[in-house]
Image 1 (cartoon, rainbow, N blue to C red):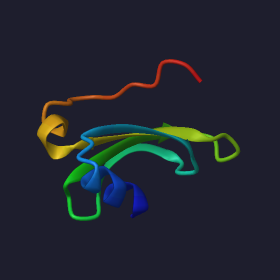
Image 2 (image 1 turned 180 degrees about the vertical axis):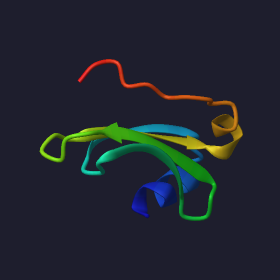
Image 3 (image 1 turned 60 degrees about the horizontal axis):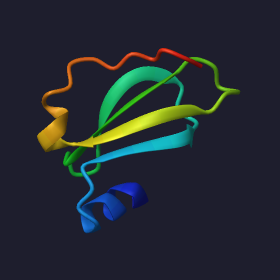
Image 4 (image 1 turned 120 degrees about the vertical axis):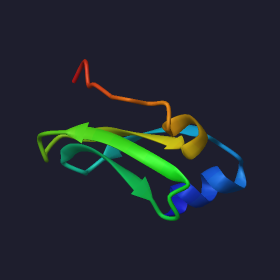
Length: 69
């Protein structure tokens, strides 16, 4: 995944990505499990937001809640 490559190269541990097309509410590990991504969107016609966090910070996150559309 291109975002993971950029984050690894630039040593970024936290990133927000807008305009995602994933529909669901879940967290998943990206590529080599160095990063974890949380996203939430229930309607396919809308663009969601994804929060990508490095493993060092990600292990401390318990829950992510969407507050505003």
